[in-house]
Length: 229
Image 1 (tube, rainbow, N blue to C red):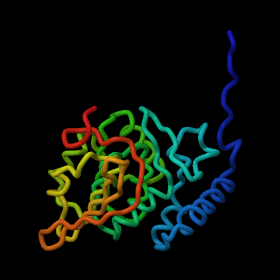
Image 2 (cartoon, helix red, strand yellow; image 1 turned 120 degrees about the vertical axis):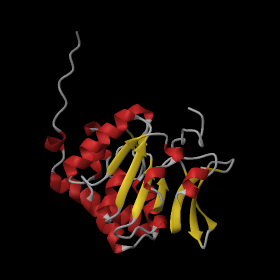
Image 3 (cartoon, one colour; image 1 turned 90 degrees about the vertical axis):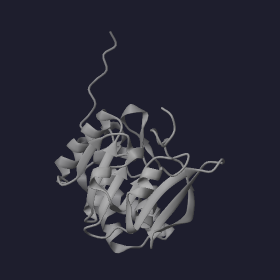
């Protein structure tokens, strides 16, 4: 049998100092240089160790300007796109935030680092379990996680100041609009026939106002008000 040698411990290959330097370069070259300058948001990206949310074999690429594969055929988003969505959501400490699509938990950790009260749903149990373990390890223990159809939101905990959807939808799910508080922001990638556009929807005096953002690429939002799985 052709027995492969065990993988080296990632920390033997990359020191914490090197990873911190990579994180600093990521923030400067991928986020600040593209016009995102909010100091609290930048601090969150400097603080949260993105490499912890990817498999060890990808640690040397954890701070690159690209998405990376995670379990169950899903991805961890490009750092800039996580920052762009978070900036569009205008997170304030104490905001009640519903995240649709926990994935690896990286976006969840950024939200928690900004002082949000995070409720996050994931349709794939394996991902939810793994994300909880990572979040607990890093000290983000106040996050509420749930395995469920994210297109239905989390009605028992509504309304939310922010709803952030980390998967591309064919249209905005009505339950998410309904669960948005007055003054709330819903950030969601929506299919437009040529790809996806990042939209921010704001509830003001009972009216929903939609603003168009940049083009993006996310895994499909699966569920009753999303794409069929």
